Length: 394
Ligand code: AMP
Image (cartoon, rainbow, N blue to C red; front, side, top):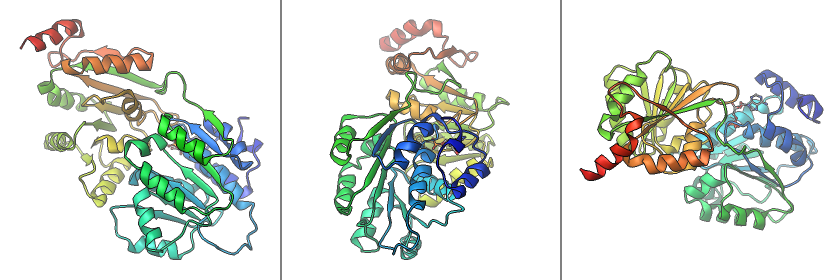
């Protein structure tokens, strides 16, 4: 099916979809809507940018709307866990947009910000909780809420949860859920073993939906790489950022100190730039992200904390100032550009020491990354082997 009208969505949901200008379901959506509406458990393997948030929000809302409106409130019914604060905030926004005609109360529970507003949101009898794991546990322990009435449990970005060490917290949260029947939905870009084990423990006969294409970065992203000595990377970055087509650029660094250093350099050049990493407090992070979203900043320097899931429209370029250590992170970073229908370009800086990692990433991609030179700033790719040897010999 490839039209929203073919699904049994309530008029209130249809109107919200129209308002957002979605004309047809994305590939993952066309495969999750019916099973979720029918109450099945579901495992969705999908990278961000595929429309996966709406893929679980819309049918969950639809199911919710079918309930008896006179039913007494017994506690939050839908629980969505997200790995990062930014992502959770984004999911909440998405629910509010999609449910704007359906009067749904959503509480957002995040770490790193004061409790007051969250406690108030919980006192408001929300139907839905969107939370990061630690803060949710805090609230339950403080008896600000309970999870006994949760009958839809959604785990978003499962692999990321795992990477961030959230598995024990997730197990604890599962222990806090009520014993009644429950629908469980799990989304992840990849499906590592611990996630598979959790799924098999938690889910009954789940439907599996895999929209991961064999080449996992969107086709529309042009991918290129520069071969450059480490000490020349700041100069290469500055020259690239000065190009007229670099209108909305995310620059990824491996470490927080590196991100701060680059931020100093780039802001010293007079660019409108923000920085996003986990040493900045939540206010600063939100402000930086917001300013980048609104176009006040044309450049956002970030560590991998910002690489996953964030949905920022019209990012024209992703620059891997530091090459990520693995393919998964590469895919997540690169996926920040060419969201939904747009085009984008991802450029990686490859130092002689990165060659091995770079070759592995490219082999995984099953697609060539274009080799670019940049005048005298970069090392010509033709000198690849020699340069690597030269470095070893030094
Ligand atoms: P996500 O993968 O959930 O982060 O979504 C990526 C982007 O796609 C978001 O900006 C959504 O608003 C957008 N989107 C979701 N579903 C659709 C659709 N059916 N048509 C067009 N855009 C969509």
